[in-house]
Image (cartoon, rainbow, N blue to C red; front, side, top):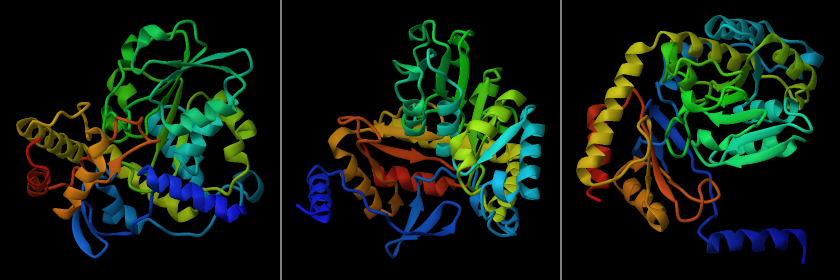
Length: 358
């Protein structure tokens, strides 16, 4: 059998299992609306929690060109340094930029834990954290989700500040203090805590290693790792996904800096977001739907019917794709609604109307 025939067979197998995916083009028409396949829709699946991707100040900040290579080879650009300095001012510790949260997590987990170390990793951690640990020579200990008592005598503890598929914050203050704590704050950044500094800050904690992204509430793209100066030095010298890749393009770095500036003072947007979350969650409860978590990620576990439910929403003009394996385990397929500060009350009510009673 030829290679292409094998690939065709594998695609057919995925299709038969309902797991074949396809990219769909969404043309934004506003912070919470767009045109999908010629149909106007309310977007209820974006991670643009504060609507900054459509913010005129963020969009107007883009200028410059490609970085042309690794910062260690082709030189760093002033935009990169300005963004790292702004992050240090915001978080109180140095930061290092990465092209994505995935690359940031790969660098952290393939560099920091060493052979002989034990790393406790929450069972629901993101694929980027899992893949980073697979590259590590440390011993992995997968612990039940949000269970501080299962960590034991681990050297490292790996968590998300806000879980992207269950929408919950782990009990951060109850975990043991001894393990070095690595927290991916991607979905909490900009939304939770003082100035949007994340779930750890909301709990009064400073993680040893802080991973954040600009591509969600920040409204642009890219990511960073923040921590002690010694950590940043080590990642600069040994983090393979930093060393061996072309740096963020200058326009993206400028947009990320503009987004960070807007995000820090966006208390009004955070208040609108909280009000929208309450409206959606209260409405779901009245309709008999049980949603996980308490925050702006609103998952509804429905099992095999998730894709049909998502199709019903789309027929009613609401874009919220179903979530299925391998993103979530088989049997836990779900609808994952995400709320923006820029959703109007009428849009949230329309989402509830199309969803209907459970």
